[in-house]
View 1 (cartoon, rainbow, N blue to C red):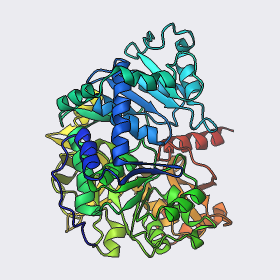
View 2 (tube, rainbow, N blue to C red):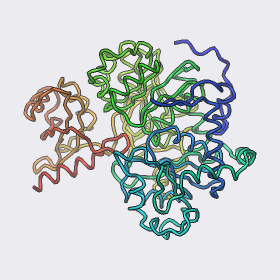
View 3 (cartoon, one colour):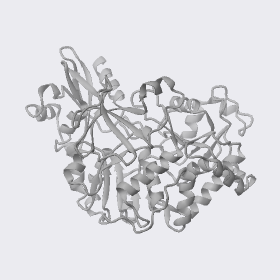
View 4 (spheres, helix red, strand yellow):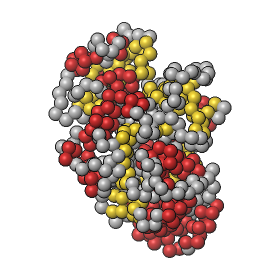
Amino acid sequence: MAKSSITEPPVAGTLCELLLGAAERFPDQDALVFPDSALTYAELRERAFERARSLMALGVEPGDHVGILMPNCPEYIELLFGAVLAGAVAVVVNARYKAAELAYVVENADLAGLITSDLASEYVDLAGLLGEAFPELAVAGNPRALSIERVPRLRFVTSISAETPPGFVAWSAFHAAADKTPKPSVSARIERVTGAEAAIMMYTSGTTADPKGCPLGHAALAHNGAAMNRQRYLLGPEDRLWAPLPMFHMASILPLLCCFDAGAALLSMNRVEAGAALEMMERERATVAFPAFPTITNALITHPRFPSTDLSRLRRLNNVAPLEMLRRFQDAFPQAVQTGAYGLTETCGVISYNHPDEDLESRLTTCGAPFEGIDVRIADPDSGAELPTGERGEIWVRGFTVFEGYYKAPEKNAESFVDGWFRTGDLGSLDEANRIRYHGRIKDMLKVGGENVAALEIESYLAAHPAVKLAVVIGVPDDRLQEVAAAYIELNPGAEATEAGIIDFCRGRIASFKVPRHVRFVTEWPMSSTKIQKFKLQEWFNAERRS
C-alpha cells in the first residue's frame, strides 16, 4: 500500500495545533461527514473558535473541566475542540449512563460546565436524566451561576435544543455569548496550552465497577493519532474513514485524530443502524471501515442489503473479535485488508495495529507490534518478573501514549504503575516479531475444578458454530466444581440452536472442563459504551437461579 506523496509535517504537539495545522493544509477538504451534513477543515476550525468564545464568555478558565454529553453529531467535535482551544479539558461522558451514573461522573470529574443535546430524545431524554440526577436545577435562580452542593464547581448546563429545560442556559444564549469574547482572546489561550496538559478525560467503561476518569494529554493524543496514520494506516487526503463508534470512546476519537493528521475525512453517524451505515459507506465511497467491535460488523454482514452494497473502494477494515469470527469478517470483505488492534483508554486508545503488509494468519491471530516509542513486556502477574517470548502473562506498557494516572484515585494509581510501567490487567503474549497476542482479561478467568480457563478461549470456539452470531462466557457457581462456564449467545438472523446442541458442539472438541454447563440465548446485550457488561449477565443468571 503506497504512502501518500504529501510531505509529512512535524507531529502536532497539542490538539490545538492538530486542528489548526489541518485547517491550514487542507482547508477545503471534508473533515467531518454525517449522513445529512459535512464540515470542511476550515469550517470546523471556525466553529471550534466560536464554541471556545462561548465557553469563555460563560466563565470557563484554563484547566477547567467541560462535560460533553450527547450522541454523535458535528456539534460534539466542535465543542470538544472548542474546549481545548479555550484551554479547558473536554470530559466526554457516556450517553448511555443513567441518572445515578451521571451524578457520579459530574461530581467525580469536577465539571465547571456541561453541554448536552436533545438529538437522541426519541431514545433517551438526557436533559431529563440530568434533572433527575440534580433536582436543584429545577429551582436554580441563575442558570449561569449554579449553586449545587454536591457539585460545587458546576456553574452552568446547556442543551442543544429548541426548548430550554429548567436550570439550563438556553442554547441560543450560549451561541450568542460568543460575541462577548473576541477571537484574539482564544488565540491567546491556545498559546498557553502545552503538550503535557490534559486535553480529554474519558471514563473507563465501568463493566465491573464505578468508572474511573482517565485524563489524556495533548501530546500523547496528537502523537498517537499520527502513529496510527503514519505507521499503520497510511492515509492521504483522498481517504474517507467510516468510524461509527460513540465519540465518548477512543475507537471514535483516535480515528478522528488519525484523519486530522492525514487531511482525510471521518464519516460518522448519530446512531448506528446497519442499513443506513451501508448506504452511507456506499454513497460516501468509504475507503476504510472502523466498526471495531463484532456487534457492529455482524449487523453489517447479516443485513439483507449487504450483498448488493457497493463497497469496492473499501481497502482496509478494523475489527477486534475471536479468531473464527475474524475469519468470517475477512471473508465477507474480500476487497479489504482486515487488521486488528490492541489498546485501552489509559493508553490513548490503541498501542498496536497490524500492518497491512502482514500475512493473513498474523493479522488474524495477533494485534501487530507496538508503535515506535512504545515498549511492551509480558510479566508474571504475581511476581512482576518478565516472561520469555510466547509465554502468557500480564501486558505491561510504557511510552509516550500512556496516561499519567486516574483522576483522584491515588490508591488505584499506586497499584497500576510499577517503575514506569502501566499494568493493563490484560493477559497476553509476544511472538518472535514482537507482535501482541491478546488472551483476555486476567480477571476474566474461570477456575473450573482447579483448572484455569480463559473465557475468551471458550468464546472463540463458540464463534465457529454456524448459528452463533456472538457468544459471551461468564463463570457461574457450581456445587461440585465451584465454578463452571455459562454461555450467553446471540444467534444469526433466521438461525436456530438449542442449549443441548451448543453443548454437544463443544463436547469432544474442547477439554471437558471448558464445555459450558449452561447456555442462554439473548437478542439484546447489556452494554456500557462498546463493551458487554458481564456483571449484568452474572446478575441475570443469579436472578434466574433464585426464581
